[in-house]
Image 1 (spheres, rainbow, N blue to C red):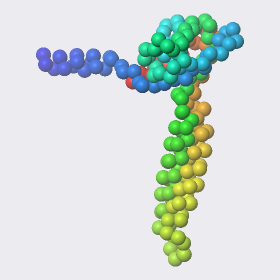
Image 2: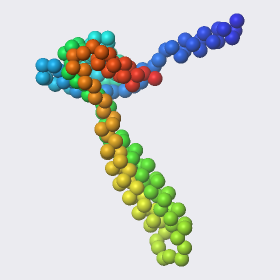
Image 3: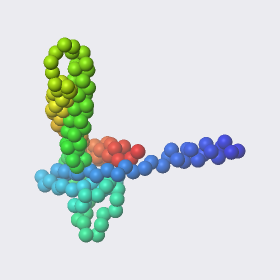
Image 4: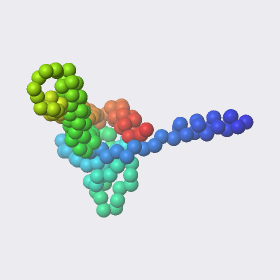
Length: 171
């Protein structure tokens, strides 16, 4: 009996998914040619909601913020991205390039024998080069952070976008 109770508690805990604290910047191209920008707040079966205030996805919109609703048949395309994602990928690339370059320089310095050189110069040089290469790689990965959806007013394309957004925003 105790084992059955523990198993049912585990199953219920697996069914409840938590919402990630994620802010998503949305750029919506409408069928009529207009473009709307905001922060994605909600995605339902037939419509999505954006606000002018930068809030995490799924949080209630304050009364003083502008709230806009768009039905799937009005949406031509949607682009979602995390704010400051480009800076994050660049920073991660630069830091990892610095560490890897410094390690390569340090091992190169240990292997070189009988040369006159300043202590740590190889590690610093390789670290700087690695930092620049890593930052370049981080900048080049920035477009991968965006998610683009071509909806064209079709419900099946809207539904696949909705499922992807829900998978992205929930644990």
